[in-house]
Image 1 (tube, helix red, strand yellow):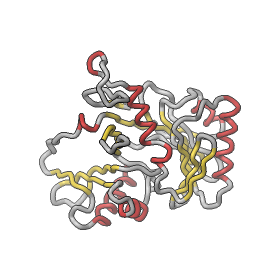
Image 2 (tube, helix red, strand yellow):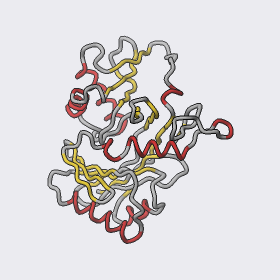
Image 3 (spheres, one colour):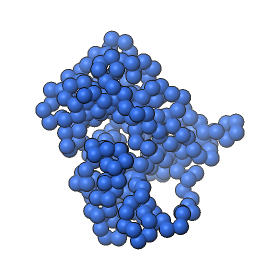
Image 4 (cartoon, rainbow, N blue to C red):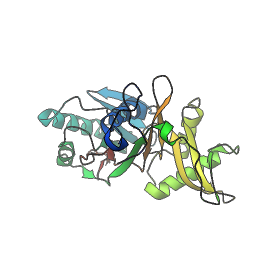
Length: 270
């Protein structure tokens, strides 16, 4: 993970004192876990089942998804049992083609990745999450010549913009990465402004060069903006994907290796 920003974050919103102006990593992790995990990740799911500390969800296209804020102190045999129950749940659901167990590098217990592997899960690539205060990065940006950043749909063609953004995501992360065009359009149109997409493109070329989203919901996004309970932007999270677990009808998906940084992770099972 890369953490960026000019000041730390404390529960009161004030900047904590830290040598060299470094961010308070523990507080950023707390806000990340609180704002962008669990319920925030299943907003657009077709079905959500709460099982212990986990939320088991199903998205269009037969995509299962496992999320949690923490595992509630489970470890050892109790954790193994939870993993096995998760595998069985998705294995026995005929609507699920594959599923993902989304993990982060600071998840506990530290042997979670090993226990997932022991259940037949293969790790995917580790990915990076960047976290910082929105007010530290909310400033004009000098774009390279020939580029423009705009909100998807700002030219009157939301479907065309989403189609190009989805094609870019599939090219970068694979054809099964993230939601479809139809799912994304439904999320944007049904969110009352809570889900917004932005793109960077070459002027006059009509091709998206980068994409981001404000919002959440079981798919990858290049960027997300979280807010405090009073609605004030508090944290920016930008993810170059996230290591995810993908399971086909039998085993499950897993977690990233523990790291001193915030990171996403996952495993895949044939």
